[in-house]
Image 1 (cartoon, rainbow, N blue to C red):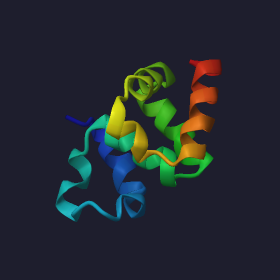
Image 2: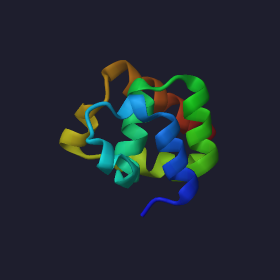
Image 3: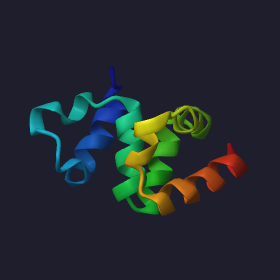
Image 4: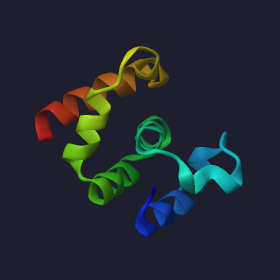
Length: 89
């Protein structure tokens, strides 16, 4: 269940969730939220995500990905955020 702040964040960045039906966007889980923001968002949006969820929580979800879920990230995005989160989380 997303907090009102997270739901507002998703509404603000609704265009990034182009592949999700409008009525289901606010109910995405945090793994999908992080994946979408990392793959399609700019750095300001990423920083806002860290502010909302906490960088340590984001890192924990990011590094606990297995198999297929890891392949949902663009390779350069996965590499960049692996390095960033290892350094700062």
